[in-house]
Image: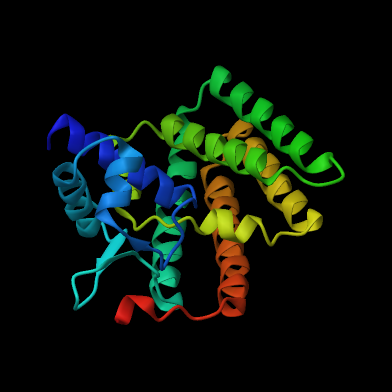
Amino acid sequence: MSNAADRAYRQIRGEILGGTLMPGIHLREEALADSCGVSRTPVREAMRRLEAEHLIRRNAAQRCFVTNLSLDEMAESFALRAMLEGHAAARATERICAPELARLTVTNEALRAAIAVDQPDIAAFLEHNRAFHVTILEAAHSERLTALLASVVEQPVVLQTARQYSREQLARSLAEHEELVEAFRHRDAEWARAVMTAHIRRAFHAYSETFKRQPVNDDEAG
């Protein structure tokens, strides 16, 4: 992949995962080329890669859309992520170091601050939530596990779900993070695995409820 195509790939992928390009949106090469500051050829190359990663779907008319996964497909994605992140948490209990534990605690305090204001700061919540999970994956010290998690279809579902969270749901997510830190401090792999698995499963049910309230977008089929 050329440098221009790689740059376009990273930008488009980031906008899909960040929720700027939402599921069902029609992706036009010319607009993407302008946005990425490249020609249309690198954009085509980037889109083929994103299609292979299932982040983009092409319809019969060869029009490209951000993938709008079915609830069944998302259920499978969450199930895989629960297994993999549960394993990462269990593995991290044996390898996590004091600086990483301290980083998790600091991140949780930032999460607490994000939800303590009159109007919870969802953008900050998402940023710190991601940092928390990344720290756990780093503490697991497994390139294979990192690669497997990266291969699970990613969607900006956390963004869609978090926007629907009540303050109580956000607080519960934080409480689960704090329980994970306690499991790490006690070096209890099964405790950490159980909490992380429940954490991901609860997120799936929150996503499922949000998904069922959304209108159906039929553009991809046409």
